[in-house]
Length: 252
View 1 (spheres, rainbow, N blue to C red):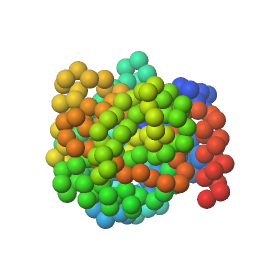
View 2: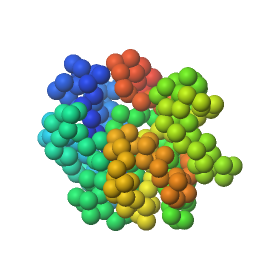
View 3: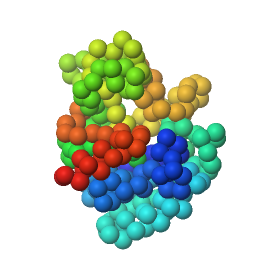
View 4: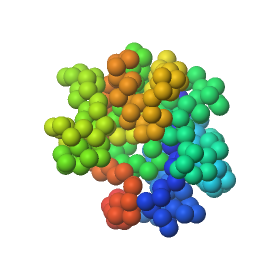
């Protein structure tokens, strides 16, 4: 089982904070944002490699951070992979970056994918248990969260609907007709038998950015199941949400 943290964006909405520092390396409640994520997964049975995909601007920073983190967490194997982009103008997009890592590492294993700017309170055990049950039947898992605000779902997230057994039956990004406050977040578990579908998605000419677009395509190709997390979750996309994360995660 491998873990991939998406960290190749330029976070221009957070300038000047991210002008010379990658967003996932910004401090939240006393430690880099990315460590709040990684701490939940390091040491879990079966996880033998962590990849961080980033851009040319911040590749050296992530490599140094990875060495430092591994020195403090023996057994954590972290590899920073550069996508060789230099700005928003030439970025590969999140799905393009996932495909890059799959190809560069010749990946043939289950893969967890998480956005480097997503913070959540719940531990990883429940998600991993559910996802691995699904993976045993070749089923990908997407994590959902009740954001509690319908207008926010319609403007920022996705309209996701599930069958009683948790299987995705509808997935539409930023759907103005959404009628549920439950949305998918960028935390996925892809069984090894579904990995090559990423290349197929891109070969068909689909949008390489916004990972939710891939889920909206994937559930029509193969059964995709869900797992809902509880507690706090934040998508750090602005100075306001960064300040909120510092307040809320400092209280943990």
